[in-house]
Image (cartoon, rainbow, N blue to C red; front, side, top):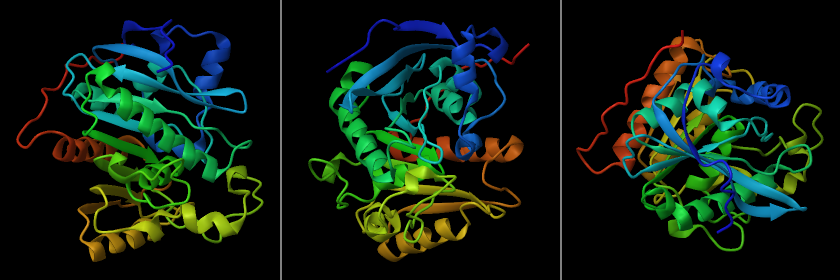
Amino acid sequence: MTRNRTRILRLPVAPLSAVRLSAARLSAALLIPALALALVAPGFGAGLYRLDPDVVYGHKMGLALTYDVVEPATPNGAGVLFMVSGGWVSRWSDPAVAVQRSTAISSLLDRGFTVFLVRHGSSPIFKVPDAVSDVRQALRHIRANAADWKVDAGRLGVFGGSAGGHLSLMLGIAAESAFAGSEAMGDERPAAVVAYFPPVDLRGWAGPSEHFPALDFSNELADEISPLLFVTKDDVPTLLIHGDADTLVPLDHSQRIKAAFDEQGVPSELIVLAGAGHGFRGEDDHKASAALVAWFEQHLLPAGETTPTTTTSSPQ
């Protein structure tokens, strides 16, 4: 496989003030899409992690499609893909900063999960169907090379928020979608999914959009990228977390797909956070992260197995 090996290192995840970035990279790191804010929390330190950045999983229009791999100090053999996507915008940021700023990612690492930060072809140039195809290609690449990071290819989970939640559901559910890529996903689907406030039905959303140019595609394609329409009894266990005060992606989206899961007998759970809008902060963020880790431990680790929590430090 194609690998960039120039930045493989062991590093402490330090408070943001201690992370040395160029001014340009710091600016890029802070330009986090609004739809991904739920996964960002105030910084805190953690143990040593091995970072393998910018692994190339494909190319399009002369550009490399990449993901970063963050290995925990004590790996448990399972891996989780994080969809770096908000409004289907997928920006590069320093992975050390991403780990330090995200409660969910840091918690997964502390519990021994290897984390893959997956970027896709970004809006405004690329549209939602392109993003779906890209992340499917990334999942195939990670599965094919999982042994390089001592990860069991059969124990991969996926999570994301909003657009990232939508892409996570597309990986876990819509194996028959026309945007499956060169071949159907079939058994290549992940073993479990967690989606924060995901849009599940894009019918009526597609078309020119000032705020979300990724939606500027023919509405005739919307069926193929609406996970609600692909729920079947063999779908993977899925956890949905949604705020009941979300006005951008209303709670109804998670409720409708939860009803579809129930009808098909798919293992699933919906956690509704009272008063939370489109983005979890403070206590809501910690509740969501704890539920996310518990879900992946339940469905990605052998029965009865848990990983001791890595000791973390607090920022000075």
